[in-house]
Amino acid sequence: MPNLLRLSGAAFGYGGRSIVSEVDLEVHPGDFLGIVGPNGAGKTTLFRGLLGLVPPLAGRVERAGASLGYVPQRESLDPIYPLRLEDVVEMGAYGTLQGTRRLSLAQRLAARAAIERVGLSDKLGAPFAGLSGGQRQRALLARALLCEPNVLLLDEPTSGVDRGAQRRILDLLVELNARDNLAVLIVSHQIGLLREAAREILWVSEGRVERGSTEALLAPERLDRLYASAPAGEDEGLDG
Amino acid sequence: MDDITWVDRIDLFLWPLLSAICAGIVLPMVGSYLFVRRTSFHGIVLPQFAAAGVVFAYAILGWWIETIGLGGLTLDAALHDPHAASTFGLIWGAIFTLGGILMLVTTGQRGGSETARAAAGFAAASAAVLILGRMSPIGRGPVDELLQGEVLGVGVHEFELLATALIVVAAALIWFGRDLLLTSFDRETAVVLGKRATSFEVLFHTLVGLAVAAGTLTLGPILVFGLLVLPPFAARRWARSMPRFVAISAGIGLVSAIAGEAAALEWDLPVGPSVVMASVLLCLPGLIARRGG
Image (cartoon, rainbow over all chains, first blue to last red; front, side):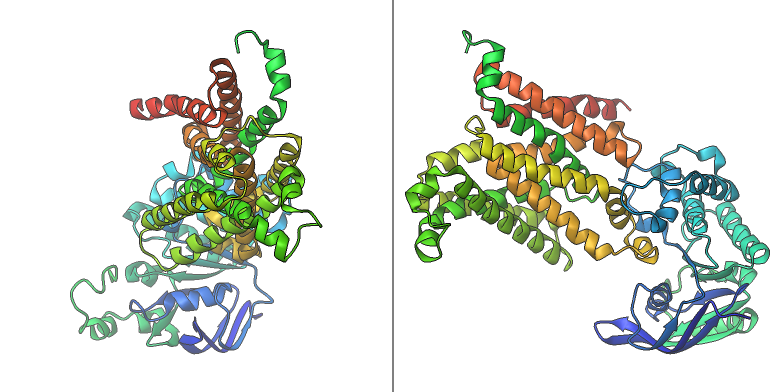
């Protein structure tokens, strides 16, 4: 099976100080990986390293086979921007455009298809900022799909949305993974949802990354042991 | 001016009127981007930095000519040569503006209160303008005119300088608008999509610096910060997409410029503040609609 992403002895950090190190990882088509770990353990740094937002301090990162689709946390996007749903989704095609060149008809149709796929066709023309949290998250997913990715990286896609919206997003990811053989990497604190969807877990703790099956790494007794010493409230969101 | 026809008035003040119209269209375009980046206060602080730069240029002109030289001109010749004096002023205005941007951006990365930083910058730049104005070999008159937004003395050369700078800024905002929008709205996605986000940030701040420096040199800080801040504030209510937001802002700026100039010529008022007041009046429907809605 071809490698989409490959990390060999990679270290990532800031200001020359590594936060996660000695990461060996291969991502293949059809993988569904949850990235989990305590706060401050280096999940976000690893995630940003996978995206190419943080250069490796050591080791190698190969992305030659990967076309990345990125779904950021919706809270990171300022609602002050006057943007409609389709404006945000069409940003997924900006990587192919230079200067004032407009989106081609094929790209516009692909954007409509992506909007339809995430179930937001009835929201066309609506202000992005006026959508609910779950709808905005699905719009960002549609934008990532417009890049025709083979690896989808999502940062806390279900945090702060209601249970129904969480379910729709998760079902969509499972469907994309199963039907299109899309590799999915998802950072989340919501252990319960990851138990349902992720086949494997990247457990990030104390600067090290451990890969294993969801059943083994997210076993309730293991989590109880790991978080037993955490003060109340520190493990908020670990709703397993 | 009751005995002068409107045609005569326009003919007499053609270059100041055209300058204000150019600024009325382009400065709100720049201001639209400042607005969505939540840095509208830059539109208030930076013209003051630019004004300090322009006054600084006048203050050191004599020393500069004596020590470094300015195309072989004497101080007297430089002061009577609009090309030399305004280009020299533009360069120093741009240096001070870019310095102000650099200070606001770099200190902003360390956290803390942006409003307090902007207020401190505004106070420092305002004080510098007044102190440097006293040292200017051309006296306080032109400095006071600059600060009060009295633009009727603008000549063809100042107009050419302003129009060239603003055409460059407008063209760049249109050409790179999509990338500037993406990098400010979602920088990480821009990088993942292969965009050089840092280059676009530098480009944006350079365009702001150029527009503010050229605008302040020609029209004064009041008109510049009025046009950077007010039309986008009025337009946001009515815009549902970024291109429409920029276009409506430019439209409101244009109407403000024309209405303000007409009022200034009719009632013998200073042009800059009149344009700003026209812009304030155009903000009212948006404010009323917001309160009602």
